[in-house]
View 1 (tube, rainbow, N blue to C red):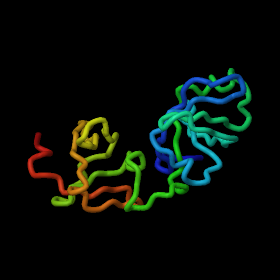
View 2 (tube, rainbow, N blue to C red; view 1 turned 45 degrees about the vertical axis):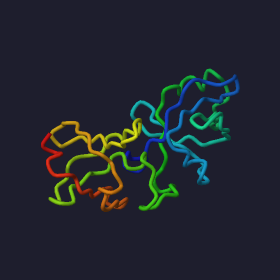
View 3 (tube, one colour; view 1 turned 90 degrees about the vertical axis):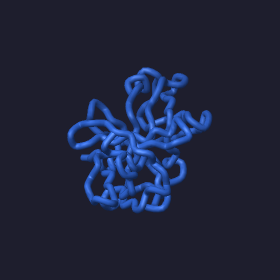
Length: 173
C-alpha cells in the first residue's frame, strides 16, 4: 500500500483527449519527464493507486497528454477526470539543495530560533513575486510565512522538515 508521505502531488487529471484513452494532465512539476518513471500515482477515492505510463507528450508547459496502460477508450479515461496525480518521493531526482516546491508540501516548518514546530506546510503560494508558505498549525490555524531563501537555514528531506529563521513577531500576528 502506498502511503501519502511516500509521494507528493505533481498535478491533476483533466478531460479525455481524443478517443484512444489519452487524458489531459495539468502539471505543477515535470519530474516524471526528468527521471525515467514507469508509473504515476493517482488518488482514487482516497486510495493511492499506481498507474503505469504507456506514453505521454507535452501539449504546452503546463499540460501533458498522457496515456496509461489498459485505458484505451474515452469512456475509460473519463473515469479519472479530476484525480490528483502524485509522484513517488524515492524516484525523485531532487536533493536537499534542489527540491521543487511541490516536494515540500507536508514538511514541518520549524522556527530555527526557538526550535519549535510552527506547523505543517499545506501549500506554497507562488502566484505573486513574494513566495509564501501556507502553514497549518497544530491548533488548525492557517498562517502565511514569507518563503525567502535568506530565511531558510536547513532543509531535511529525511526528517521532512524546514528550519527557518522566522522574523520576530511574525507568528504573533
